[in-house]
Image 1: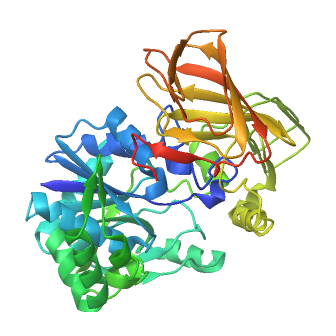
Image 2: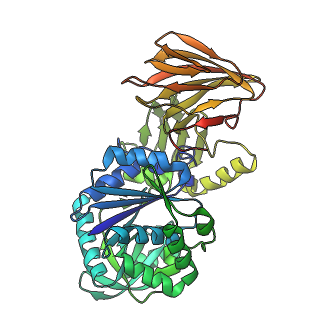
Image 3: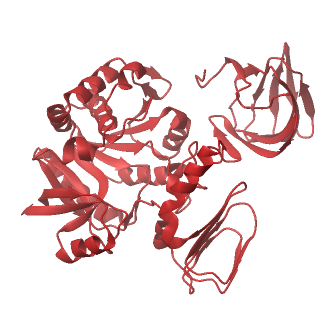
Length: 469
């Protein structure tokens, strides 16, 4: 049985400002009407002999992962493993391997990042069948992408002796300069390193144990002492925090003598930058990709993305412009790999734009800042049907709520109020309260906060459906 393992812990820094820490690129509809994670789940549903899906995520993204699986996953069983801290891919895969063995001692793992694009499903399925055969033969298979250009943003795999449907791995190499990349392409035996793998769960644990016994011991103890919370497996945080931090490439694949490469030529992209998005979208006659409300004049070979307002551009070439309702990015397309340097500056200045959008996702819905000033701010809140916020109070602010759409069931102290469109209420400072949506359509309210401190950390949760502290 194939057990797909989707790694969903990345932050997608290079696709800032659309990708943020609390809502990274795997949860964004960048290519079509599905998120990248949604597309990845749909992709594995098309494979034969798949009954159990595992997603490894971090604590902060857990409800977005759960929501995605509810929308896209129809497999008989799925598990969401929560990493209390990030320790790179090698320990994350070890946790998944132990979890998979609980359901199937002979499980074959298909390791996939959550944020890749693969356009040709049949070719992908064919490569997976070859990878499964290699795995059943005791090999640790990696998928090598057939390169179409001397890309300097990827690591490479050099193949060795051909063994039927796969070849021995000669060695792995880091991201090369352009001249070296051209030599790799002309040689014909180098492939892009996709970051996708396939092997039996027990074989991976065996090889990891050879090269990093400390990591394997920590992961085994962490999963043995895990707990179940709603749809989530929470590994033992104190133990897992002691794990060495290492990628599967360094921890296992570059050291094992069982590594093989299966070639994949299926329209793959890791969507690792704005130029990569330009590459995979259909361009107009001027070589532009325009998303949202965009007008151009004498613009060529550019990617322009508008989220909330008209973006007008004139007389530019080979540029990226990305507009959100709180950040505008303008970059030369050849420099988009350096976006992470801007994110570093945002962090150094102790701003919040690297972490949050104006619209913030919560397990019950979303809230979006409209305006703020000294001692007041205004938000738009959407609560999904059947959902409710925590029972809470605030030490420093009062709140005024106006229902714009739907029906609100409101707890205010000892009272319960049922409000409909155009009705309002007031929550005095320090009053215990809760907002619920008992209806079948989204509830939207406008919230006006007033007080001496309006930060999101001024919330005392007394009861919470979602297990938040």
